[in-house]
Length: 182
Image (cartoon, rainbow, N blue to C red):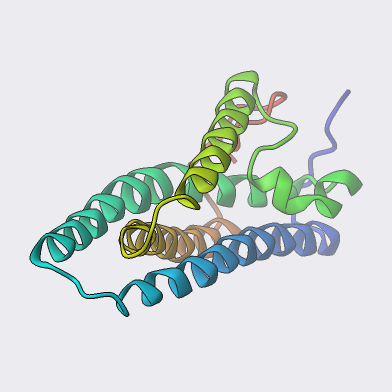
């Protein structure tokens, strides 16, 4: 299978790239909204000093591990690179399923596919486990996740703007046919 490469973005490719980034942002934003409501509800409970320590520690921990290391250093630049890939290499399936393409659920290197599906399974398991944690502890944990996800959305918007509007973007899209930088 050969890829048709365009030197200039096409309108179809631009729409696909925008749909990919918007779909990922909407997905993350919906999670932020749901978890934020649970976090806010935790404040209706009487917090002891150890609740406050746990809350602040978890927020800083999740900001660094999920927000900075997970999203800003990994996920967000890769999603932006894959959106850029769609912009310059629009194929019908890439454009229609652009959010899934951008999150590396298909047409990715074997290693990236394994990581993507493993992380997805772990997140689903953690979400199900969190349902059994009583308040205020669940809200305390979810507050950290809200901070990490919000950082992720902000970094995704930043990297996507850079990737889709600049002449050069040096992050790999991790596609099987081309591991070269666009």
